[in-house]
Structure formats: C-alpha cells, structure tokens
Length: 199
Image (cartoon, rainbow, N blue to C red; front, side, top):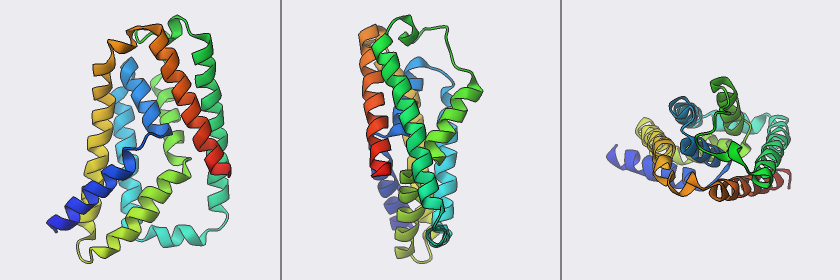
C-alpha cells in the first residue's frame, strides 16, 4: 500500500510539473493574487475527479467513444489559440493593465470559467490523468485506491504551491517589462500546445 501511494504521488507530480496552459494561467493569477484559492482548488479537484475516473476504469470507456477525442482536440485547440492571442496582445500593448496591483480584475466567475476550460477542454489532461494514471494503477492490484490518493495528493500539493508560491516572485514582476515577458511566454506556450493538438 505504501509503495502504491508513493508511486502514485511521484508519477502524478512528474506529469503535472511540466509547464502547460493550466499551470501558466495559475502562475499568472498567483502573481496577481487574484482568486487564487478557488482557482487552485478547482484545478486540484478536477484532477482528483479525473484520476478517480481513470483508476475506476473509465479509460477503457473513453477509448470506445470515437467522436469524443476529435471534438475535445479541436475545441481545446480553438480555446488555446484564443487565449494565446489575448496574452500576445497584452504583451504587445503593455502598460498599467499588466501591473499586479491593477484595478482591472476579472470577476471570479470569469477566472473560474477560464480555469475550467483550460482544464476540461485539454485532451492532454485526459491522457495524463484518465488514461496514463488509470492504466498504471492496474500494476498495483488491490492498492489502486492508494495509488489514486498519492496522485491526488501530488496534484493538491503542486497547485497550492504554484498558486501561493508565485507571490514570492512579486518583486521581479513589479516591473511592467516582466509582465510583458510573462504574457509573451504564456502566449507562445498556449499557441504551441494548440498546434500540437491539431497536428
């Protein structure tokens, strides 16, 4: 049981640490200190749900629904391209809107909607959590629940560390040029992931 828990934790952490659309969004919100708790909780709970589905055997069901994969892939790519353009426009425009103390704060609903879209419209999330973690959990026969709990713990630890740890970088991002560079990187990351989906 302990081995399954540790394996789930380490594998879950290794899959989630890589920079992606969801992580870039949480990093930016953490730097701006905007709606951090509901956003990181949403990401962690979403991961927990997907991990539970994967371990419960939903991966086999998902592969049998042929039309679902292309719909998710192209829908996710379209959303990522739109978000990429928004970030690139912010990087080009610059100005006070990129200040962490800006009064132009998105509503909690708008931030959560973006967060949910970046999570649930991204096929990579399903591949990592439902398919990969779900299939590997079968190697721990009788201890699949411990494996899933380990992976879920890694997700909660990562997202809360990213969201609340981002403020340690606040002095660096006190300069508008740093915000412009961050938006540029986020825009490039989103576009790259979008192109990888349609390829």
